[in-house]
Image 1 (cartoon, one colour):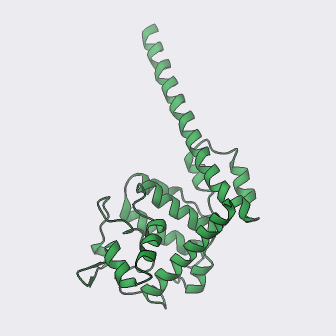
Image 2 (cartoon, one colour):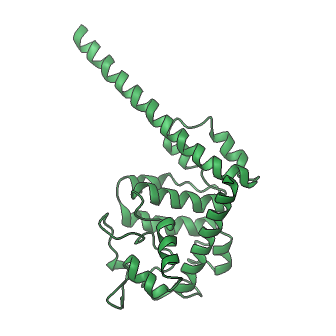
Length: 225
């Protein structure tokens, strides 16, 4: 019995140590975001993140709060952590619509894309970038977009949305970690890479989303200087 108790105590100590390390990692992630958002004078966001500095005991609580419009990103984080890439891509689109209260319409205008909440775009990008090991997300897509100088066809060739001059359908996407950089998420089109969503073609949607991301990145870079 004594040996069994000691074994259980040792196991508990290991679990506590792991929990402490996880909390430290979460605090580091929070500090990374705070360093970029707080100096940029986003007054409506700063108090939310400051309050979070004392609430980082579990990742679910922290992630659910990275939103200007009270979107819960915990389910998306869980899908990405489990490698459920297709479900994560579908949910990403649903959350984007929810953030702009466009669930019924099912699409965003170019003006709405240009006004998409900063903190939410940063959160979505961070989640995709983090859980794909830097393979996917707007960071990768933006770099590729710049390298092809905004040529949508060339961009699609690079990210695997067009293969041998054939625009792929959503069902042809690769939801595997072997997919090339920038392949996911897909938000500028939903049925086929040459079609848009709503009233704008895919090329204009992609340009608008990456322009919004670029504005966010520029704001963060300015905040660091």
